[in-house]
Length: 153
Image (cartoon, rainbow, N blue to C red):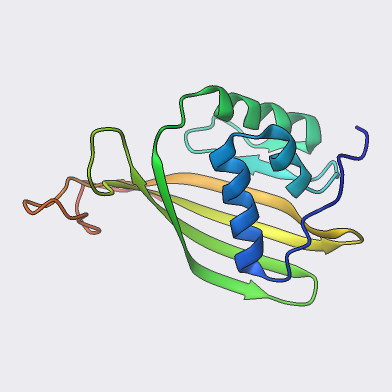
């Protein structure tokens, strides 16, 4: 695949997350793929995905499928874990999800990401997103973080 343009030039984890969600919310495949390393060993797993998508072509195809769906959900990311070194950023992000018709978040997506500083900037190498809990709203309409059924690891 030809070089897709300059990599993300963010200087920290917050900048990486900001660029990722800008591409995600815009459903912009070119913007999203500029964040990824052009390497055969990149891996992306989406919520409910039956397999890990490996390499640039599979990762791009997986994002095209995500972007083809209606993305009218509200997403509020929060970094809940991070480790930064000179060349690696590892993140754990919890997304509060508000679906159409809901007035407050009623579900979560849990994400882990690994970014690496390459010659041209920070690039995403691993992204794993999985469903968290889908919790019912409390009687006053607030998200109940500990509600909502059984979970499996």
